[in-house]
Length: 104
Figure 1 (tube, rainbow, N blue to C red):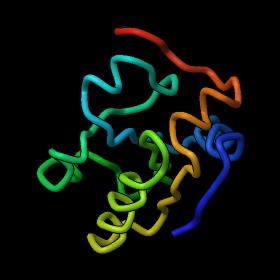
Figure 2: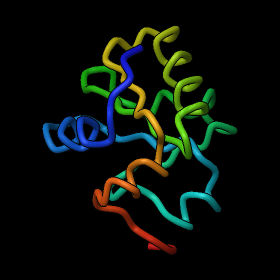
Figure 3: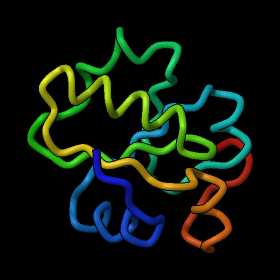
């Protein structure tokens, strides 16, 4: 699975990719990348079917480890366009990319 920078992740999302956050709800509520779709890793196997197979998926978590696991799972399920955002939400926020702090 391809590892990409937060800047590349944002570029791909702007081009139509889906940003998928696999952290838990409380983490997402604290801060998340703007526009990220939340599917917690704890629910991922049951809910991965909600994700489109015909669009690129950019996986994100806190630091990049959980999203890599989720991305590998998606590849095993036949998803072909999956990338992992290196450094996760921490790197996204540190890069001053659009993010939402606190609950929506």
